[in-house]
Length: 147
Picture 1: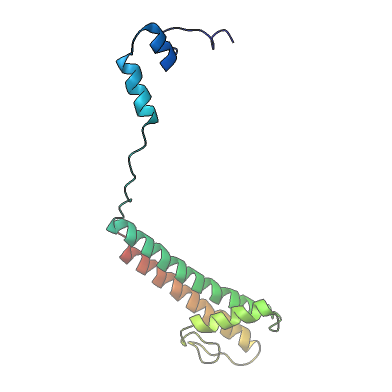
Picture 2: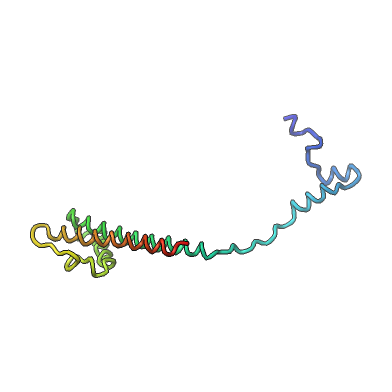
């Protein structure tokens, strides 16, 4: 506690102490005015082309990743014979039909199976190929756009 109240060269001087000492110290007034002066106005951060390209690449990769995930989850829902009356399962299957590009469809996709478990096989193969397609295309687009 004694060190807190010690007056010496290290202790800051107040305006009252300076006036009592009989004058002003140039260093004290400069420190006082800079401490109380308002900060300079902030300038807008500049955004470089590389930052924009990086952000666009990240968004493209994220969109392709979401599409691949939707197809994989839809294939899983069909494979485990999930209740298609469930709102969540129904929504996932609807979104999978949107992102399958009419190439990886369940009805007439790249491969069409018949016989036992044909629906499950169609879902796993066609939606699996669609998910792989989105992952490859997403990575290629991301590498092309990123600086």
